[in-house]
Image (tube, rainbow over all chains, first blue to last red; front, side, top):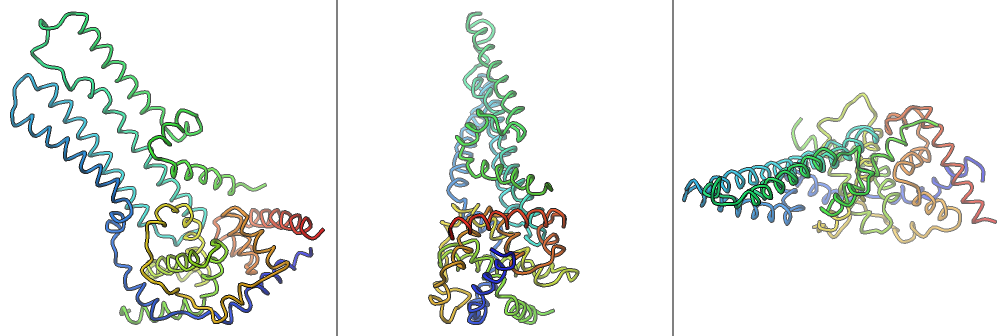
Amino acid sequence: MEETNFVLLWKEQYEKIDQSLAINKQLLKEVISQKAESALQSLIRFKARGIVVAVIYLILLGVVLFYAIAHYSSALNYFIISMAVIFLINVKALYDYIKHLVWINNINYDGSITEIQQKLAKLQLSIMQHSRVMVLQFPFWTTLFLSDEWFPYSVGWGYIIFQLLLTASFTYLAYWLYKNQTLENADKKWVKIFIEGSGGKSVMKALKFYKELETFQQVG
Amino acid sequence: MSLVDKSDLFLSVIEMHKGIVYKVANSYCKDTENIKDLVQEIILQLWKSFDNYNEQFKYSTWIYRIALNVAISYYRKEKRRKEISNPYSEGLFKLADFQESRDIEGNTLFLQQFIADLKELDKAIMLLYLEEKSHKEISEIMGITETNVATKIGRIKTILKQKFSQVTT
């Protein structure tokens, strides 16, 4: 097939359409008059379920924490501190998630294709990076049930060693996951399983597309 | 500029370049319903960006950038898209003889199919090439160098030629 034929074929295909294409002006006016919908409103519409579940979870944690503080006794020290940290980590994760979604929703498409698509993919990927803050709560789940009254006499050394090992191993696991769950490691199998397991298929798609964009920008 | 003047100007710009919006939507979507939704999303994004239109670029460049960016992002938001119920039963664009116009055959049909099979970014570059945009304009829209544009167009055309030769022999 001759080179120019592609252009001719394309013209042939759209010649008729170009002539008969008409705008529904009334509808267009209606559509643009509704653009005032805020990023937050549309966000709530599209991601409502996930955000509602997260908010309910935070309320539950908050109520438990409030109850513990209201009925304070030194026996609850470990519980209050652990629960407060878990609560704050979850608040931070939800805040970051919403913030990123608002950014994605508000992106201005008026830029070159590679620039905007890279920005979009990066934003999607940064949701993953921020979500890794969640793993930092792991060790605090092992200290929730401890009591001031147990130490140092009420429990044996065996239990103290067991508790230390448990908390230390969860601390190390949290640190290791936090440190290694990065974009640079996204090709590794365990990171993929971790991301996909937490509902991050769109993140994997974004990552694949981001790499495609990088290759696209290279000449030769 | 008042809101009425602004929407009138916007309407005339869209009227003048409606073909671009339709062609982009038609190249990235297969069924009529999706084309209709994508056209609406492109128009909305154009309107949102209208205040920031940079006169340094032609209207067509501005429209291609937004339309292609929206179209490429469109399928990557598939789940979200399914949750949106389009409140409008009609489309923004009307085709007088719609069925007839889409009733294409032969090489034109093959070209449409082969373009549909291209990756999102290659599809964008090919669409601009078929619209006879200069390498300079394509590089401005795509954000890659002119040399890269030439290389990619060459490669895509070779692939298309191979595909054509397979179906015609």
